[in-house]
Length: 204
Image (cartoon, rainbow, N blue to C red):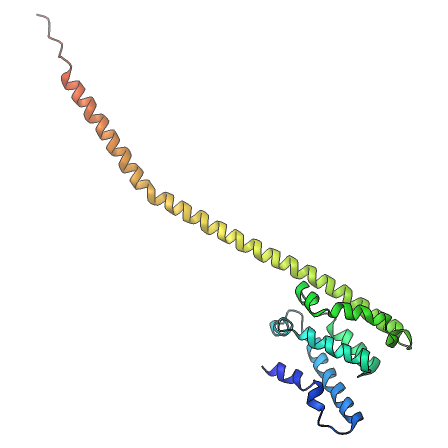
């Protein structure tokens, strides 16, 4: 889709044709910053954002964070921008676990980009925000899924109860007919017995 094409433009391969090294890195950083700003400004309730995350966008973000920490691509400015942009993502436990991005974010605090620079407090503040917001998001998503499953079970139970009542109602006429036949048989037997009893003669 369109977003995947935009993300591809922020990949290393997309700027490989640029000969000037500084221009190449500058272009790459700008493109990644734009994508992060666009996604970070999207509401957590937005279905498109959830779809993007479900398709593995966190893996892309992790690769960008790896580039910052390993090669310095974007430096502290892109790091702070990245951390701020992803903090409010509506992540699930599965997303966090499979992407391993949360562990990488936590590792930033021990990296030289944090320890040796003047932005240590700002970086730690944003790292703490990501961890806190993501933990809250995971809990919300888990609770929402639990409520959804509970509602689904309640609906299934209601449908089953309705089906049982309907089945019971359908069986009522048969039971009534059977009971009527039995009563008729009893009545016939009683009538026969009555006919066989001698009538009392009147005294003269």
